[in-house]
Image (cartoon, rainbow, N blue to C red):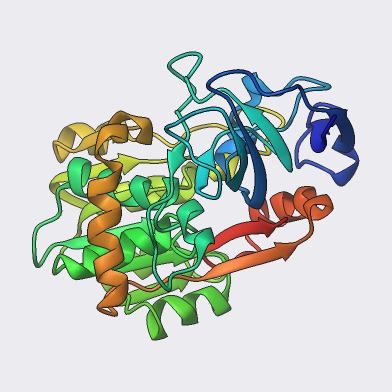
Length: 333
């Protein structure tokens, strides 16, 4: 019987996850039944949502997450041997998969299209879930117009770095908020952000008033908390806010006090909308086709922080939550 490894939750997270909260287990894999496939992971994704979805964390359960894997055995005509597929099977290196989804929360495996000379790992980043999140969360919710000012928090991460570049492609002025001087330098010098600043060393309210004296039209929020309150206070009339995440609170042991936003929402007639990227599942290919073309044209750049070794996935996850990554964080199995 073939065997596989999986990383399971050994103890529930209290504040920031620790390496000791995880353990590696080996399991015997079942014989393939009709319609099933056996996949070997090549890259595993680590993302902020994995910390946020605490309701799915159970002691002994495989840690949630996505991976890009090669199909090594198949009893499904729709998933041939040798093809690569993106699946949401958690932190496992070999998995027997029934491609038919077992509920609305589980996305079906997605066959990876021919990426040409682009890295396979991009199907977990700019040409995967984070890329679709950036594309639809910005364009469909914020609907930025040429000449408008767009602010992105968590701007050097997998989603934020793509959001800012798409806004630039659409003719907007882009301001990025990040957590280190190195990230600020990358945003301005390599990605073409008009302004970027380190929220740890500047006054966010003052920096925004200097960078956008007429106010902010669109805000793509990955962070939440006090920082987002300061951005919203600097928005223009009829501004739009796309709420993607709230990473500033994911490791909090108690619910933090929220800044008062209602007076700004009412007085400036702002629109704020949260979203889950699965809403656009049937249109992901549309986004990836356009973004792949932008990459080949040099309009859209990407960066990956790659950790080697399946056993080091917890360290990569913890580092990502601390903001140690530039761009997309992945593990090379």
